[in-house]
Image 1 (tube, helix red, strand yellow):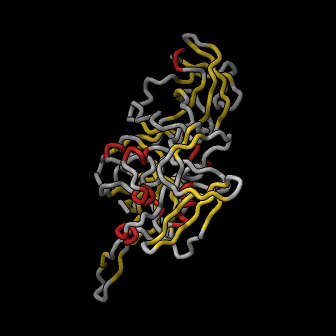
Image 2 (image 1 turned 90 degrees about the horizontal axis):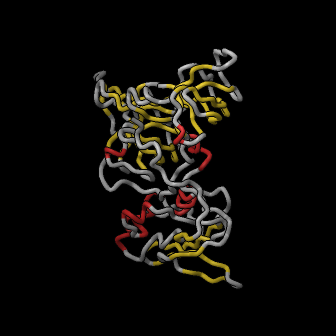
Image 3 (image 1 turned 120 degrees about the vertical axis):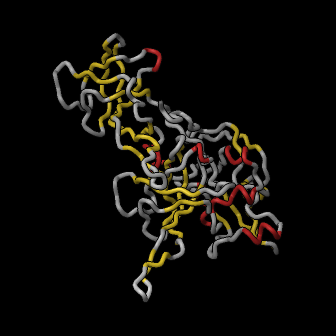
Length: 355
């Protein structure tokens, strides 16, 4: 059984009607001003350019970028909606006795400044809204890899071989596939059952299996034994490898926000097998939808350290915060996250917690 395989919203779609981003980042309430800290080098204004991300812009103004929704006063459902801001928009910081407040400037023959409040804007431009986090960093992970149960691919269509009798299959090879259904479309992805993802906090508990993405295929002829063409191969493809219907490239542009509950998890793997994890790396967490996590959640990374006392005993030091992760894909028991901030090296088994 696949875990929430197609449970993501459309990524980078061109909006027809969009909510203006950046409602007032800092309200005039002294309570909010106490809790929200502006960066020391906060600019008075910023012009949005192509390539910007919501996380990047928030980071220019706020010490804690994930706190946007709190400041806007958005409720849980509003946080789930995409926050849209476009290249050319000008974000202005107003300084008040109670702290800062952001507003958006619009050019209407002269400079017309509009205070940001929730409202609807009809978007007639073909320019797409900027994403929450860098699209290039996460795009391959929106449809692959795949997290499955132990025998999750057992009933999936599989490659029988090729007419040329090739052992190793690659791009442009025509192959025969068993049990390919007609009602699932013509575009498929090729996977191979992969490593078990184990929970380090619960000995012996397997959270799922990460199927290895091998490439893409296009169905040409549907029959008892169907014919497909491999359109892309990222690794060697072999007899017995499985086919899964290709999803759309999906991602809902959720605003970064902290969970409103306490969570304690761990980093259990990193894409690419690197030992030192840093900003821009993709990591797997041992917490997922069943633990209350959702897309757009931001968690803080902590590492445990020890020191030797004068008596030669090892003493546990307080946890040290080393970075932040942004969750962009969720399964039942695990999630994929992008490291958006790192101040020190990050390692597998480091803790992730509500910031």
